[in-house]
Image (cartoon, rainbow, N blue to C red):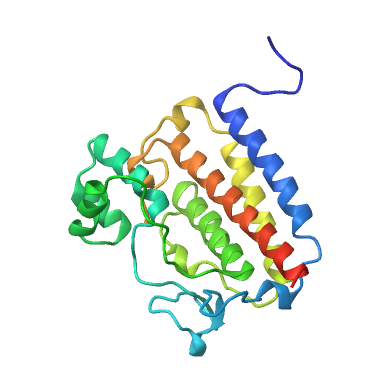
Amino acid sequence: MEVPGVRTDRLGVLIDQFDRAKEMAQVRLTGLGDEEYLWEPVPGCWSLRRRSEATTPRAFGPGEWVLDLGAPDIPANEYDEIARQAASGMSVAKIAEDWSVSVERVQDVLDHTGTPEPDKTAVTTIAWRLAHLHVQFAGQWEWTFGDRRQDPKLMVDFTPSAALTLERFWPLVDRWRDRVAALTDEELDTVGLSQYPYGSDPDEPFISVLSGSSLEFIHHMAEIALLRDLYAAR
């Protein structure tokens, strides 16, 4: 049975879900100030910092402000995805290359049984989470619909201003959303439509890339919403 206004095609479901998630996120980000944007709820957070004050080994960015990034690893919440990639025929060496880890690390993940222990990773600030998403939307656009030349880690000029960050961020989100909403079924099924250089995008049909991109947006925006609640209640 068809329901007016409800799309049931695979692209329509993803776009409608993304639109709703974006609406909720924009409401939750209303009034975000600079102090809250950079608030570190616990010691040792990853955040946005001046280059001279970076505390992580792989902090990146093209300008004065850089985004914290630690040593590469495979987080516990990706173990099942690693197993799926291996089961689909992807080699251990290719998985290791995509994650910038050793073959031995991938094999450890594949040999793991039971529920993995929670990751001992740093808590990240609102600024970090928004910057992470900003890099994703800028980079995936460039490597799907753009010239496929720029390093995503050098595409976003990070800023300590919450207002300026959001002013730059939402147009990129809209550009991505509107372009993927116009894709054909053939394009959605095309393996390698996205050549994003970090991760497995070149080895996946684009519908999988799109689903993963939406999931990344949704879960980081949920985390940002919780951080706002904690900041308000501190």
